[in-house]
Image (cartoon, rainbow, N blue to C red; front, side):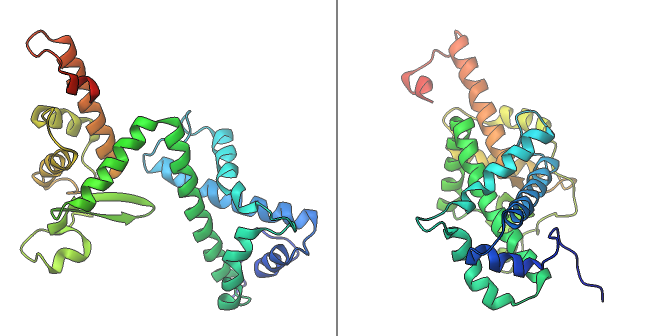
Amino acid sequence: MPTQQHPTQGISLTGLIKKICAGTYSSAELVQFVNLLQKAALSYLRYQELSGKRIALVRQDREELEDLAMDCVAELFMRDEQGAFVQLRKYFGQKLEEVGDNDAEMMLQVRRLVVKKTKQELSRIFRERDPEGAKVVRNIKVAVRSSKELTWFSDMGREFICFAANGGARDSVYPHCPPLRRNCPPYPEEILGMQFHGVSHPRDSVSAAIKKLLALVEADCTYQNYLSVDVVARIIRSARNEIFRDTVGGEKHPATPVDYLQ
């Protein structure tokens, strides 16, 4: 079997990481490793955009994604007073013992580190870019954790919400409930938003709003019976903004202090 090639030249991936951790690398080798991590982060960001997430302010802006990918991995190269890369040493110290000289396995470990770090940095960037949207997402996660009827699962780097009765490992607990419809397409977000606006109420809690959304997708067997967290956040936020505009602008329903606070 041919040896799997990696974006390192003249040295194996594990050999390069050993040099990075030991501080015996050359300038060219450091640039090589930085480029490797940036490419891994860029690949993850592109996948997220293809999955429907808005990562770059200008969709599919290559230069912005490349800069964002570098920002996401930059913290991994923070040095201590001795000039050592603290986070890289901490992560790869044990991995080098476990993996040995298996470059293919080491590449998987590199990607895991990059994806984890990229997710963390994206959360920070999104909070700075859209604090209101970040608050909605936090409230959704709190509502799911606090509800026995709701649960979530991760798939291909995204988080999804479903009724606990048909979610993942809980299928065996609720054998009478339908499983996740993974082979169906996602429910069209625009249509779901309009339907949700017709059943939502200004006084609905976040948990109640999520259940109404899931009830809508559950009722149509043509589509998936689960929703991504970002879709739920956009629809709830949009519906609340619409209700607020209707309430403030309409004479039949004068706004209350609670409405303005909302």
